Each structure stands twice: as structure tokens, then as C-alpha cells.
Length: 120
Image 1 (tube, rainbow, N blue to C red):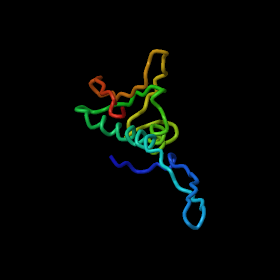
Image 2: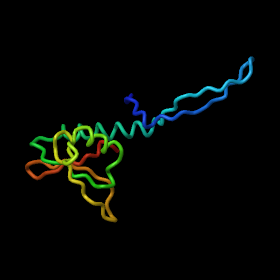
Image 3: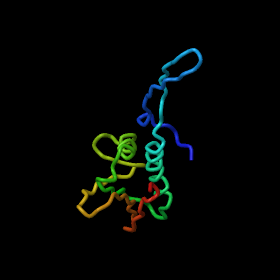
Image 4: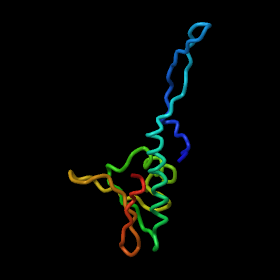
């Protein structure tokens, strides 16, 4: 899948090119494709999770270990600084215990939950 480029994952590298005329140094931009893909997969996973809701969603419940740059960017894009939201829904951050792995669920009005596992 072709994802947009998040320039946070772009670095500059210098290459030395040799030809008949001698050596020339060129600066090139290098994309960390794996990090860029993981970022966009996590961003799109929220939409994929919300689309599975058959009843009205209430809030996102996210473990603190799930929060990375993608989640922070998504929250910062629409939050007012006081209330964290994603797609207009409140975000509850659940502290990690020693035995928890990163998790994100969408809680619905009927108290069911949809696990966001599209990012994996």
C-alpha cells in the first residue's frame, strides 16, 4: 500500500558518487518506510475500527503503551487542549499494568467494545 510520507521519518544521507570525472557528494533524502507504514497503519486503524460499530460509539479506551506519535498526532489534530478526542469521541487513557500489552478499544453505547487490532 502506498502511504503518504510523514517527513518525521525522512533523514538526509550523503552519498559519494564516482564517475569518470571524479567523485561527487550528493545529499539524498531517505524514507524509513517501515516506520512510515506503521504510522499510517495506526492512523487508519481508528477509522477501520469506528466503521465496525453497529451502535453509537461513546469513547476510545487506550492503554498508555498504545500511545505513540501517530496517536498523539491524531489527538492533537482535533482536540481543544483540555479534552482529548479522536473523531469527536473522548479518549480515556488506561494506565498499563505489568501484564498488559498495548491496546485500544472503542466502547459503544450498549457497553460492547470493538478492539482496534487493524494496526498490527
